[in-house]
Each structure stands twice: as structure tokens, then as C-alpha cells.
Length: 350
View (tube, rainbow, N blue to C red):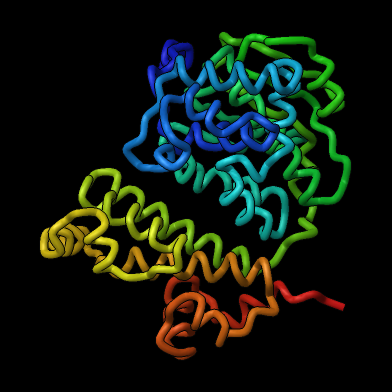
């Protein structure tokens, strides 16, 4: 890319990229109606694939967050620490199962487009040091305040993964400095540089950090995460070029929130003729049921991670499978692991 591209702020961002900021704003005490008024959209509408938010409205929302957080740098640090409000969290959960920091970061690089088609992540190694660099067009919004949390999130993960107070050698932001450096230097405990003319931001650290094992490592969880991420990316690429399939997939996801895993209901909700949707899916080598089964497997994984004590019979009822055999067969197909081996990986160990 030309450097000029990095300096040009987009006129609008996808609602799904703005949603984490909106949720974070509510979590720190800003009334939801105030957030929605600033954005000119309901929070529910933000998660629609077609939702776009004007940059000026995003800046207005971030101004509210800054005031509530006593300044832009405090807001960035706070949002970075509140990883659960970041759209990075799903990808980060999968990386946390990796054997080492190196493989965890490689996982992030491989599946970064799940977060945004414009997000670029890259891991480089030299003899003694390593750099993890990244670029997202939204870094330029409001002098970069909205995405200054990115490096904070990343390094929070590294520290959590290895349960050590690992320090980077240097942190480079591609933004103009928006306030005193104290918040950043005290968090990273190293030098922090802001340069709005740089092409990308990066974190430099000792290469030995890459070999550190993750305390959360689990081979079954990592294998499942990689398989589901690969399937998710494939489906995302397909629906991004087909509006009808995009609407159907979105309807499947909305239905899944209410425990509804039914293709017919999803197609009707999307207001798409069934035969048209079936033809579009067949053209891409898919069956409409694939969207349902993929989402069902993802949610089943999340339920087992949150509560490994959950029995297969409970999952059958909660996830709408016909019986345990159907659950085992579908789960194995979409994750590459049996539900028993997956849930056993997260059972408490003596």
C-alpha cells in the first residue's frame, strides 16, 4: 500500500467495528440512549452486516467516552484492558490455546481478516528480537484514539498467556500523541513512540518471548479453534460477495441467540425465497444447513468452555439436536474433535 492510504481516514466504518466502543461506553456508565443518539443508530442495528457509521458520529461517541474516562489516553487504556468489550476477543480466545507465544501470534495473523478485511497483522523475527506489527484504517480516527487500545489488548494477552510480567522493548503507535505519555509508559513499562507518518504500528520484544509456553495451552482447543476459524473465514468470503447469502447467515446468527437453529425460519426471517437461497448456496458449493451447523458447533464449544461439566444430554436439549448421536456426528464434522474430548480438555485438573 502507498503511505497516503494510511493517512486517509475512511468516511464510515462497519457497525460491527463500532459496536465494541458503544458497548464499552455503556459499561462505563454512559446511558444507552445517549450512546444511540450520538451514533444515530440503535445498538442492535450496529451488528447488521450492512450497518455503516459516519466517522463524525464515531468521533462524537469517543468524545463522550473521553469525558467519562478523564481524557483520551485514560479511555484508550481502559478500553484496552476491558478485552471482553473488544471485537478481538473471539480470535484471542482461540490463540490462547496455542502451545507457545509464537504460535498464538501466528494464529492471530492467519485469521486477522475475521475481524476486518482491512486489518493487517505480521510477525517478524530476527536473531535477537521480534516485532508484531499491525495496521487498521480506523487507527486514524479521531487522532487514533479509538484504536490506541490495540497494542494494550495484545500485550495484555501475552502477559496473561504466560503469567509473567513480560516487558516489550519498544512500542510504536501510528497516531499523533493525544496526551501525556505516562499512561502508556506506566502500562508497558518501556519506551512508547507516536508517529502519525509511520505506515504501521508495532511492538518490539525479545525473541525469547516467542518460545514461552502458554499456561492456557490445550492441543484439542487449539485444533478446534483453527478448524472453526478456517470455516468461518471461508463462509465470510462467500457471503461478502453475495447479499442474499449474507442476509441468510445473519438471520441464522440472530436466531441462534434465541436458541433457534432452523434453516427455514432463517430464510423466512431474511425475506428471501427458499429456492433462490438454495441455488446461491449450491453455486458456492454449500448447503444452507452449513450455516446453521457451523453456528451450532461454535455455540456448543462456548458452552463447554464456560461449563465443562455440561452433559451431552443437556447440550442435545439446549442446542436442538435430535439425539446424542446427531450431536457427536455434527460436532466432530465441524470441529474435528468429539464433544467428549473437547469438554474433557476444560474439566478442572487436580
